[in-house]
Length: 125
Image 1: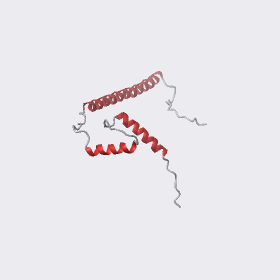
Image 2 (image 1 turned 180 degrees about the vertical axis):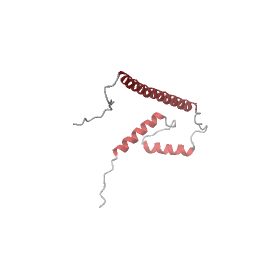
Image 3 (image 1 turned 90 degrees about the vertical axis):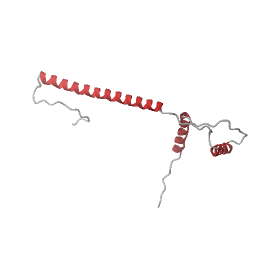
Image 4 (image 1 turned 180 degrees about the horizontal axis):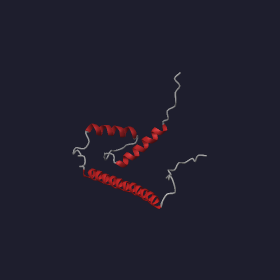
């Protein structure tokens, strides 16, 4: 009967001597230490790269804000959209861009909408 798993086994032609066993243990230990050292170095390298990217992003100058605000055409489109949505009297006090938190809500809503629209298979006979 063959086992359902496979393990590498050291095969010795005769009874191994103490020196061979010691050599086998030392080589195994060196392989494990080399693997752990390479993992530690890769982890450190990745964390430094991410920290450098974060610094570069923080040093980037902010996008210039137009002094005049939004163009009149864009304000008219926003006012028309608000008028189409609200049936009660309203007044637009402030218009601002979306923040990352606002985008998270929009992305979540889009994913729910896309998930609710399942395509039905069609028969083209």
